[in-house]
Structures are given as C-alpha cells and as structure tokens.
Image (cartoon, rainbow, N blue to C red; front, side, top):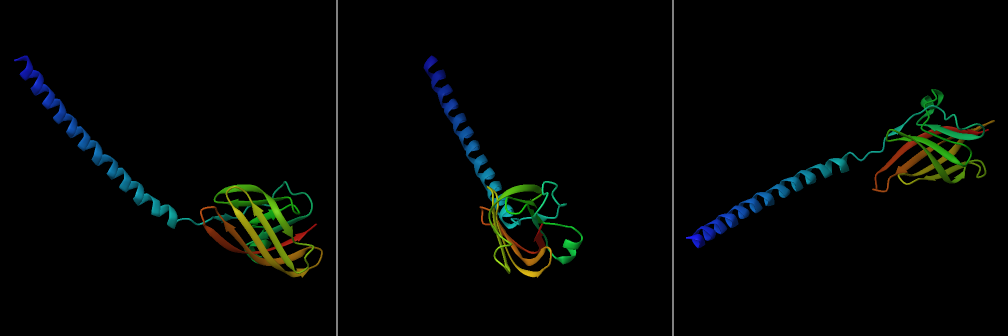
Length: 163
C-alpha cells in the first residue's frame, strides 16, 4: 500500500511540474514580442534636436557663434559658440554641452571656415564661407551633427567670428 501511494504521488508531482514548465515557456515569448515592437519606434524617432541658447558666460574674448539663419542671429538665438579654438558650446537633445574643438580654421584660411568637434556622444562638423568681413568675419554655411548610432542631422548656420 505504501508503494502505491508513493507511486501515485510521484506521478502527480511530475505532471504538475510539466504544467509549470509549459506556463513558463509561454511568458518569455510574449515579452520578446513586446521588446521587438518597441525597438522600431526608437529607430524611427532618431532625430537630433538642436536648440538655441543664450551666449555662454564662459566666453570672454575672441569667439565664433552661429544661429540657424540671419534673423535668429540678430535675435541672439545661437545654436553654437566657441572660445577661439578651445571649447565649443551647444544645446543638443535638451542638454547644454561643452565640448573640445578638435580642429578649427576660421581666421587663417581666408574665405573658408571649418571646425571639427567631438565628444563621446556627438561628432560635429562646421563648414562655411565668408559673407563679409569688417571687424568681425561673417560666415554662412552648414553644420553636420552625427551620433555613434548613425543618426545624422544637418542644419544651416549663419554667424560671426571675431574678437
């Protein structure tokens, strides 16, 4: 009699464990599907937000600063500023950033303007041509901002470099 009770108990225990395993196997496939549904939304909304900001207080002397167009420049809605070749300031994706300039050739190359800026999250390239030059040099061109994931944004720039 003892053996029959032990045998029946073992069969019931094994059958209960199979049901639990079956229930556990269905849960991960549902969560995997949810994750896959979420990933494409992030990829399609991968735009870099370039925002204007007030002129940085850290800049004391010579500088370059740009807006998206002449009207924004005159309204002091800057999207880029640097302190003559050392540090660049921007507001990207809601964060104000201070980044190191890798290279800058705004005064010595005549009619051309070029700047390269990098940090861990962004690679920025500025290209432009001199529009007019008086005490300060006025430039017009474009800025390309790239993230490591391949997201890229190009915006027009208008601004000046001078002391």
